[in-house]
Length: 257
Length: 104
Image (cartoon, rainbow over all chains, first blue to last red):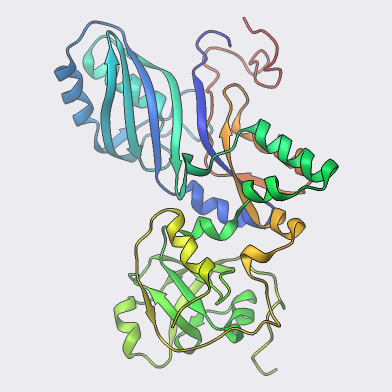
């Protein structure tokens, strides 16, 4: 590839049709990267370590010239930066951050603090929300699986590759609703106490996923109460749906006209 | 009360630990809905996520578009851009779409 062309690879979850509704939540979740940085002068490991320590936590970051968002100064959270390995001016970093943190900028900023500059050579994303390198597939593997399915009627390969969209709900608290509450939610109604079968602990204002007893994703919403109070409640609103995933009328209507 | 296996698999997927608290005993009817792991292939395709290892060169949008064409579906979306940031190269000679060509 050309000069000044950092190689960027790694986890890229792609949602198909209905799953695009859930992809927004994957985008908004935490990321992990392994990044190769070149420092433009000879420096000691300890100096760099202390500089990277400064970059942990809440940082100000202006997106780079070529970026997909507006270039406005914004704050981003860097959870941790670890030096995995180094050799002369090259440093291999493992970074965990909130979404929308530009790694290229982070390396550049580290160089500015250092005084002589630094840049990113290669970047690999190792995690995006619930998706890690554990079940990653290459474009070639996908192409082969599609070929096997279309031409050899063997769908086993493709089945191994496709991840049911419900797995994207991992990492957020979930609520199971009974069969009769599902269609009301599909039409946009809130989840009330009587429809709830089971729940995982959540706080007021959390993003909560709603699933059926079969495990299908119904909707994603925002809780209006704390789950601790749920045990003593007999009625009342619990979750307000923000994004409905299930289609209407798959489950029976339980309300009167 | 034990739930359908798939529900536990969701949390095992990313080692999320948050125990289930049962509010009431209830079972599901086989007449409605479908178990996510028993979908037929066409339904599965339109309800699933592919965890692609993005190759260097093309942009995230291009990769998503190729997959859309490979699977012949109407809509795809990707989780977070992972861009090669064409530094110092203009949009026109950025070699991502023609990534098999040699770039200077």
